[in-house]
Image (cartoon, rainbow, N blue to C red; front, side, top):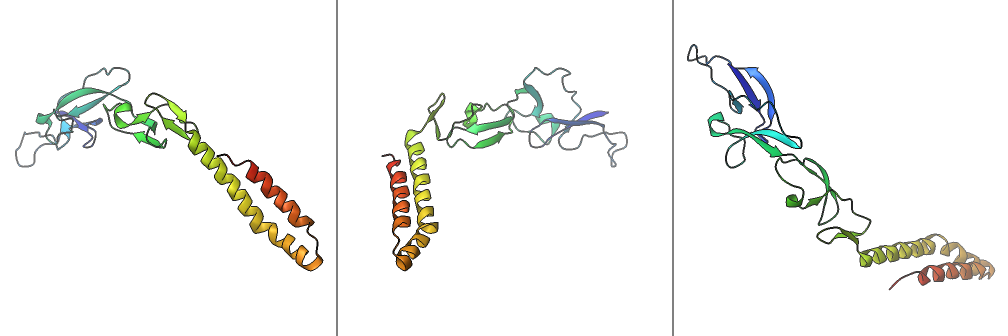
Length: 176
């Protein structure tokens, strides 16, 4: 007797095999759990996958509780609409929209509007301002001590003025 093993998680066909004889009952062949003697359909529609499932959409351990079903197959990598992060959709029969996903890549600082991504201007401005503040902090950490030393030891304030001009130019770029 030919049997067909299916995945306990998804119900997908794994492999065909020959059923083994029941050691307690001579001449009886019983499929193991997650295997069925029901031959799967030879043809599956494009964009679909075949799974052995019960009425609740689960792979049954006992083949008598299920049947071969054709499900839409959207498996793949998509972007989450709540945070723009990549996520793999691995469940058969679930649309990306139902899982809170989209095939459209988000732009930097993208925010989902329900149909498309839109740049979140507040987030973009905040990020640009944070980058400027970081540049200012870097200048104060690396360049300012040497200029202060030169002023203290030699009375030369030109280095301090140059640093202050750099900082002022950066501060002028900060957006409200």
